[in-house]
Image (cartoon, rainbow over all chains, first blue to last red; front, side, top):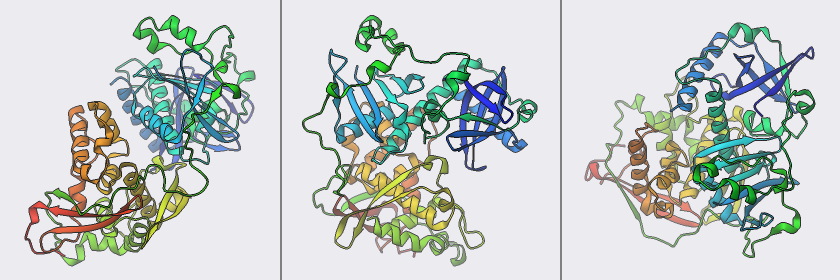
Length: 79
Length: 448
């Protein structure tokens, strides 16, 4: 399952690769970090009625947290 | 090389070992063996993972192979949810490491493209069993449009001419091949009813409430001595007595739940004093210092005691994040967790230490040194177990928790004129007496 399909509300589809997911209890949200066309993107998500709803409207604090997490996880991956 | 198959049918999990020369023999595992196998798999590092739509294949570094239906990771009405959740997390961690290494070279520092992230409008992914392993521990029913939408056909290839054993023979000629092999198909490995051979001595838990398997009753014992060196806590002033202020906020819940669940209230109060931040505005935020993410979807089943001992009944409840953020909920989940760990290791002291170090630190340490974990269960082995865990992380060069956690908790215990504390607790259906002997405070005046 390297590739997944994200569908927006207008029906446009995007092929993405999930790098990792993370629940942050400080923000009390689930996040996923993924790739679309070699761009590293991040969203929060929640599960509603068998679907995962992705929200791309993150704050800079959330992005800062996730950038640090990417660095840490990459360090652990190559440790 | 042992092979296991776990599945879920009609919301009931099945646990099988694939036996012998004949691939079609799936031996049903009994409860004790299931727990033993799950603990072993959780403690064993994973070499490779392949997540398919319906099944996940895992190769462990000790050559064990596991095929597990993704359905099995859903919450079930059995006692294995916590184990499967730990296994799911280990699989997720391995998968994510492989994904990161696949896309980024060592030393690179990728950052999120925030501008592009914000450009995308709200989106959704239709749920699938394979996604559930990565995104959540509760997996929705299979309902995905990925096959018809995806340009790439990810359907597992099915070939009746290939069996796992045949391929294992082809690929197992050297160790590296055996470790890298993941069968291309898994559908043929689903057992038919006639293939399943139940163990004659199967002892599945019944619907009644006997004492849980992991709480084995112990013989009546005299007082067990626990010897440690620690300085009792001396409050600078009454106003800033941390024990008193913590007790004022949490004490009623400590008393109630600790007694109900067979643990010494004064020890739980001391532990919460050590754990908790200071009182602010008359309350304490997260006194048990719970890591909420670790409790997501957790189901508790806690034995209930009264003056006569184990009542034969259990308190059962699910973790609720909003309730965990109240003092009562937080303390309740803290004590339920300690009870779980006490039962796991048949020791109050090891259970307390596991609260800080994690429930699998001892099994990881035993695995690392090639020791039998049974030699480290029980109150009489508690300090030995503590020392082993501390040594394990020191030898790995890892800072992990608080190596002096027991001393830091015990310093808040009320002591007698000899500087000792006598605690009563239940392990299984037996009452045990623990004398916490403070070697540094022998013959000191009581501090409180």
